[in-house]
Image (cartoon, helix red, strand yellow):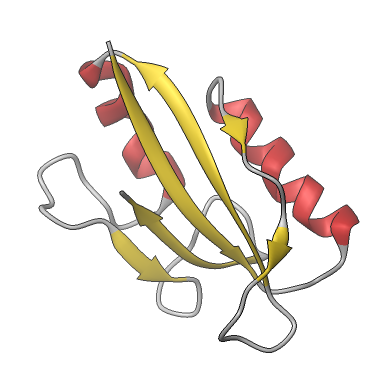
Length: 97
């Protein structure tokens, strides 16, 4: 089993909508979330980290559900919501660390 971490930037400061993004992630897996905070370099954006412990095959099956164009074979997983369809419309940026 391994711990995987997502860095998520949401395009709003509204806690209700950030909670909706976290809820959408929770429907995909057993994620644990860091506190929500204002994203320092973007106007009106929030950020948080989501971590999940699981087997590699479980994580690989999850990757395409996070971003429409990611595959388990990609070497880098980071993208902006205006470039691709994310798991939730308020996700501005997503990166697997």
